[in-house]
Image 1: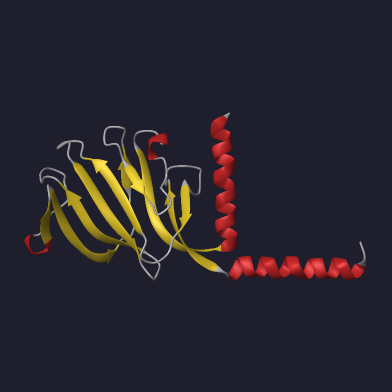
Image 2: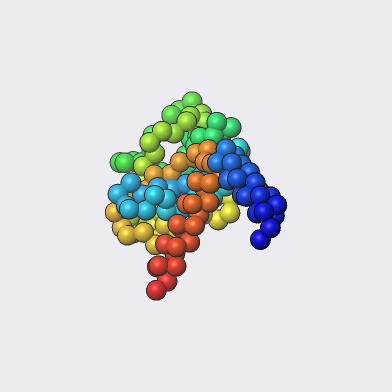
Length: 175
């Protein structure tokens, strides 16, 4: 290879690496705090995108939906909680922030930032998380797994690394 071509190629690689290091983008991700995997699921998102967590309450056997919004910060914000009943262990309702929509009680959560969000996944509650592109397969996780959903501003380089690790992990599950 000629020195000039090598120099141009090296400059291009350095420029691309620099861009990948400094360029950041909002990413919804699910970490498994008790796992060796740094990230279970990740997806590029935009401010205004909704993330919906749906589960069947283990005691009341009714559906609960938590609707979250991706903010400009970026962060995950609590938008609304939907449930078909109230009772032991179900989310709280507040008279001034609760309305009826068909059979659902809908609580306005006021777009509060969520910090240290943890959720216990159990085969009993059929947990599902829907994202703009579909969402992760939470049923693939063993019952008792704790998930930590979050939105972070990741470097393109970090996002690419996590994405490659997720592909390698999925390929390992196929064998």
